[in-house]
Length: 345
Ligand code: MRU
Image (cartoon, rainbow, N blue to C red; front, top):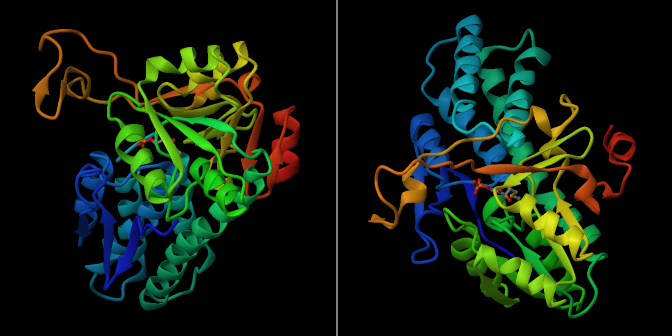
């Protein structure tokens, strides 16, 4: 699935403006870190792995304008840039893991000159980008083992090429399955309020010629109740040490429904989505977004202006509701606390 969601072109970051899809495939060129920060905030670029790559490239944008050879000043500048990028969105840990990897360059090269550090930061950012491309394909191959020919799969939000450097996590499993001649049928939840499922997932899957049906979020139970879903595959924004998983709001409801209807519920996520520093999902910061995302659509009001709104962008699915987590190192099954450690540490 070749969609170049994010790339480094002539010293700038080129991203697909995902707010314009599915109407237009339009790109934004971010020439400075502020423009990239804004693109992250408004979801022009989004999805946990793509946010990790964006953060790394963002640091490169931040150092473009640094003049001089003073190492101390340069280090302070890089750290400030990393902190600034870290204020864009709080939940996807990939963003913070990537920033930590960029900061580590400074620590591991205590004697390097400014020119040398710039070079090393660039290689680190490219390594993060390449790693994402590589691991998506590996996860796809592992995950495809869970799919039988003609399976009917439900997914939520967009965990595809648009949410990563390319290829995707949960949708990558469907691409790999198709490559292995095990075609599946996908039900994409529209994913209110910002419709990543309706706008992005269906766009991607149709391009890949995968049998795709769009449903409103509140139709999921009815389909499962009719025995029409064989498995659910979702991505993740942050996974705690015990397997509790934050993903797009609505994922938790699908997991509860899946348990009731005895449908396997799979999470697909790379190592960069794990937060080994937290014990459980209770410690995951959940982004709260503006009320306008819920009270209007496409500039048109859909609710009274003065109504109170609750708009968390993510929810946490407890590990007990998850059948398995597909990673680039293989498929992790319960008990997650023990097996995540075994597989990833
Ligand atoms: O708010 P978004 O669109 O960034 O949310 C994205 C998701 O919830 C994805 O499912 C998650 O990041 C995994 S992407 C491979």
